[in-house]
Amino acid sequence: MSQPVIFLPNPALPLVEDALDREFQVLRGATASTDEIQKAADLVRGVSVFQARIDEAFLDRFPNLEIVANFGVGYDAVDAKACAARNIMVTNTPDVLTEEVADTAIGLMISAVRQFGAAERWVQSGNWERNGSFPLSPGTLRGRTLGVYGLGRIGKAIAARAEAFGMEVCYHGRNRQSDVAYAYHDTLVGLAQACDTLMIATPGTPENRNAVSTEVLEALGANGVVVNIGRGSVVDEPALIAALDKGTILGAGLDVFADEPRVPTALLNRDNVVVLPHIGSASIHTRNGMGQLVVDNLVRWFAAGEAVTPVPETRHVKPGTRRAV
Image (tube, rainbow, N blue to C red; front, side, top):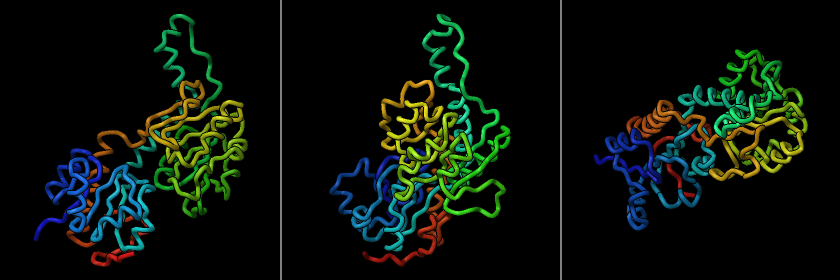
């Protein structure tokens, strides 16, 4: 029996590409022409995707597609509901990146509270030698309360680390979780009122777009720091910029943005803002682990008819049940 054809819209990690070449026939969007992709469309049974939009139009192009293996725990670029309606499996890569992202979140939080980015620029620019010590930071971790928006795997790992720093922890999400002792707030505004460090660890969805609004930032207060390790779409960036300009909040630490890789100029080179280029899970160790899970999902699907890490919307999907829509 011939190997299944896997479509790779964009280049992937060498580990992923090498493994896919061993296990499957690979159709590469980076090297194949539009005509070649169209001619092979009926043969494509799987997609390995990283930073590519999978929507209704994409699904229409591949009538025999069975599985979309997404590189990343967040899969907001994949229309999972549309895939579920067609009985197409969608997988992501949870767990393998949890600890790395949590480490990054804590580092970003400390950098934002203590203004380490500005302090580094002070050294790099020669100001330390010319003008003396960097000004005392107005923020400290002492006595802070961390409010976690999105207490999933990553949110819990962040919370555990924050407790080690002596921080109180509370959270907001769609539902109260019976297996955690942290205080729960049923609104995001309520969470912001109860904390002074707002950690965003939730996926981006249409429902929570711009959820961190002017009202939330005002509730956070003048000692407040926003840290976003989730998705840029969750924060109303103009409202955040206005809050920073007016002193409504103290500062921000941002790894993600609404229109990546474009970052608003007003968020750059500020003493009270630390920016990172979406590197929460970006170590060789962790990205290779994520890549291996992408491959494992594809191999398991075609060998055993099941996925290793299906997303909730498509857990019910079985092989051979593709429906036209």
